[in-house]
Length: 338
Image (cartoon, rainbow, N blue to C red; front, side):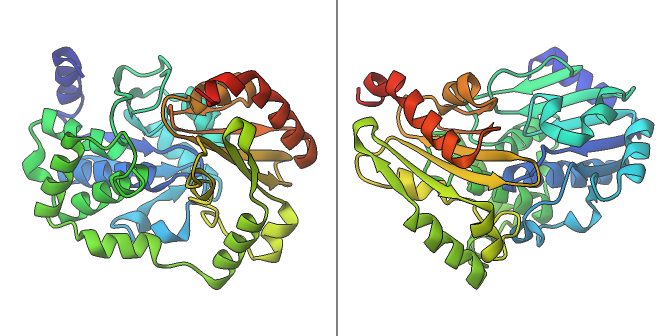
């Protein structure tokens, strides 16, 4: 943010306000961590703030400080709409297009409140009065830390806020192994640990709470793993039946795509997950190096994200989606093998 944006935010927050904070649909650790950390700060400063998530989020995030106060839009739409209508200020975190909120989009579009966007994804929209966008950042949680610093509010960061921000940074950097992890990221992490974030405890809460059925589903995913050596690509498929047979819960397939990317010589990995209720094939795409899955997803699968991590969807059947994907790869053969 520039000096004018910082001044605008300070002015917006100078008097108590009714505020709504929104993560994207299917919120992950970074989305929930950033919204919950900001929520606690705003409440401490005397604002009436509510986090409204478009839909439910994974059970392995349900331990996070303040999550019990989250209002889930698709479960309590009437109450959520009233909060949005009454809001004087709306923060949108970890996304930059209102369409990323799914069924919640119309309510946000009709809102009379001013918007503040904090996000690290590419190609931000122009709906916000103040836009804090930085694609070089590891996570939105790291951005929230810098946002608070710019508001001269670092001293307000307590153990709960630090815990939430640490969670988002850890999950969005793949436990600090992705290229977006910088020296500054580690400096922020050190500060959060100093504020009371228990790194070992947070890691256990996120990664060591697997159910037996989730691990069995991982086994199915690995069995379904296919390699296309000529394209340095690996892909995984999971059908609705396979999900149902293993009592799938939201978040159970988190990280599965990275197993394909971990293979020696592979630079592009995709997981295709059938969602019969929405009649789509949901896709998560990951890459190494300069191959942009953001551009690939935008060009072919109505998606987007970051250079090395993106999402998309297909309206075709699983069989046709995979066949189309393999056909499309032929166009990228030179790039993938460079």
